[in-house]
Structures are given as C-alpha cells and as structure tokens.
Amino acid sequence: MRLPDSAHTDRPWRIHEVARDFELEDVWSCRAPGAGPDDFPVMLEAIQASGGLARQAPPVRFLFAVRWKLGALLGWDRPRTGLGSRVRPLRDRLPSDLRDTVDGSAPGGSPFTPVYRLPNEDVREIANGTVHGVMHLGWAPAPGPDGGYELRIAVLVRPNGRVGRLYMAFIAPFRYLIVYPMLTRQWERAWRERGTRAAAAS
Image (cartoon, rainbow, N blue to C red; front, side):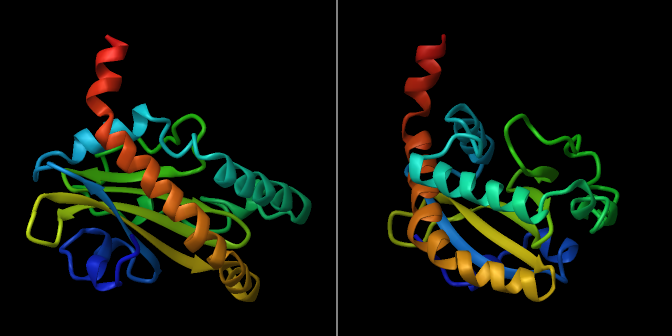
C-alpha cells in the first residue's frame, strides 16, 4: 500500500541526516502480521530467502529487462555513470558509527550496493546516467487497532538533470501500477511463508 510522505519523514531514522539532498519519491508499506519490534532481521532474512531484489514477478522482470536494454543502448549504465564515478557513494558521507555495519559489496544479482544496516533500517543505493537512487527499508509500528510492525519501503532520488527528471516522470505509472504492488505482495508472502521455507530447507 502506498503511504504519505510523512510515514517516512516523521520517523527518527538515520537516513535523514545522511541523504539530506535527496528527494523522497515513494513510500510503500509491506504488512507483517504478528511482527514485533525486534523482527526486522527476520523480515530481511525472509526477503533474502524468497529471492530478494534479484527474483521478481514476470511483469517486473520484463520491465527491468527493458530498462537494462535501454540503458545499454543509451549508455545510462556505463561505469563512468555509476557510484564512485559520476556520483560519490553515500558510504563516503556516513558518520563513524554507521560505516562498519555492512561491507559495502553488492550481493549477487542485485544492482543495489549496501550503505548501512541498523536494527530498524537497511539502506542500499544505485547510480547510473539518469539518477542516484536510495532504497530505504525501515521497520515501524503499523497503524490501526491491531498494532504490530510493518516494513516501509522508501525511495529517495537525485535525478541527473533534465534527462533524469523526464525518466522518473516516465516510469512513475509503471512503479505505481506494477513494480511496487508486486514487490510488496512478494515480500508480504515471504513473511507469511518464512517458517515453511525454513522447515523445507532443513
């Protein structure tokens, strides 16, 4: 479910001090029935076990395949457009207590590079010729009478000039109608099936 910006901006997350010059693009929730305040690592493990960012529903994989093809044709994904070339990695601006929370290497199959991880935050970044983007996963109390906790997915961006802003505007309908709804459903299913998957693996 898409959330108002305040669902991200009102939380006391460390990302606010690290990415002050980024624009908040989207905030979505991923429900985790029965979750408690200490279950963020459990949710992240469930997501990873389900394939994480590397395994998506076919429509989402198709959209990303089109995006990578366009990037190859237009030069959006050349090494000189990425982290450490066109833009400085967020890791370069981290305060000392956040620097060693992850090793900074991108996991296999994911285009995102880890920035930092805390008991209630996981931050990853990506950069190319169109945008410098941040995916922030935050663990927060769920609204409503049932209580519990939920995963909040926020996307922050720094578009690369006019091309970057046009690109973000063009892909907005695909994000809202296909990518985020399918992503949140996949991760909600990963939470529900976490015990079954763990038992099958053992």
